[in-house]
Length: 135
Image (cartoon, rainbow, N blue to C red; front, top):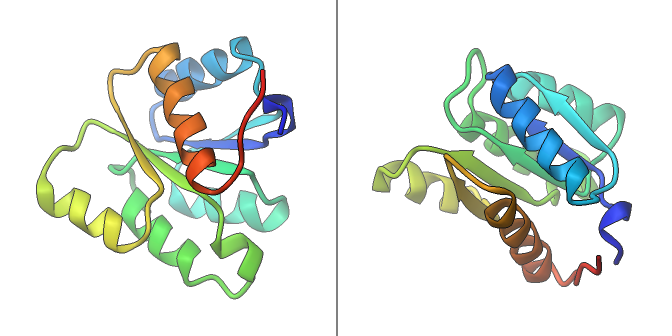
């Protein structure tokens, strides 16, 4: 699959982090990149238009990343609940990582991140889902 075919939703309550991630994704040639400010806004955006991948912060209010992932995985729409989710986070506490894995998070991207790290992690998440990305 060509990376331009991916529709990525970036979810973070920090405008600067969203801007950085979306700018990098555009520079790397990824397809449509959308934004949401928290988990509930992300659920609404996905209900309106599904995404190929969600890149999501963990610490957000009012709905954080773990609550978002739990709601997504329990969503009534089968295709939607299977959406790959990679957490973009500074968290390294084992209980947070364990909870995310229990909820079937697809990957973790540690802040601060670079274009190379973001690209590598997206390719890894998609590969684990059986999708190889071409430039």
